[in-house]
Length: 223
Ligand SMILES: CC(C)(COP(=O)(O)OP(=O)(O)OC[C@H]1O[C@@H](n2cnc3c(N)ncnc32)[C@H](O)[C@@H]1OP(=O)(O)O)[C@@H](O)C(=O)NCCC(=O)NCCS
Image (cartoon, rainbow, N blue to C red):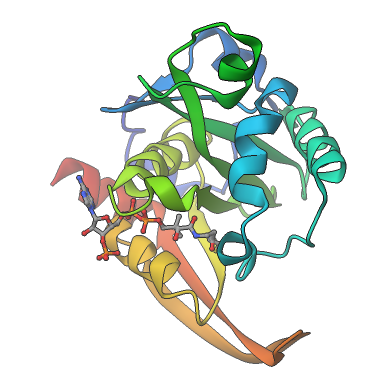
């Protein structure tokens, strides 16, 4: 867990503590109550495929349907994104559930009781204004256990505590009730609903924006 930054951070000009290299989390991954959060790796492709291929997972995230080979390439691409430095940079954390065998390990006959059950994203929205975007996906077989909330709470700590974000936000398809509940459980506020922001397969789609300010996070963490 990161130390709570001092109060002065709110008064001064916004400044994200970047650059950040994922090698740091390779050496010292984040540990939550039930999971280890470490950089997504190309070797996680089998576990990721297990949820990336499911229509219910794809419904509200801007991923196209991919075949297994394309999905592997997508995981490799995301695993290769290792640095936060400029607007648009993103990094991905694997949510590794201890005691759940990885499919890759099962297939290879090696027993490693760690499976990637989801992943988390943090993206630089605006370096100048210290704004970070977060995102999440969890295998449906592991939803409904509070794992997304546990991982996302650690993600907020990373964003505010280590990177010194001023505001952290998430963009959701407005119909994504599970993700909206997660945002609210985390203490994020619904900041806006953008009507008919995108045109998708089901017609015009609304976007919900949830956000949390640094002082709100600190209040939550201090109690
Ligand atoms: C959004 C998503 C990550 C939420 O996952 P989730 O498992 O529902 O979220 P949480 O970890 O907060 O779990 C909450 C549920 O677990 C239950 N739960 C059980 N044990 C719990 C515990 N120890 N702590 C907290 N909640 C617990 C809660 O009651 C809650 O159930 P409810 O949603 O029916 O009220 C998941 O739906 C998902 O991956 N969707 C597909 C991808 C996607 O849309 N991503 C978001 C793009 S914006």
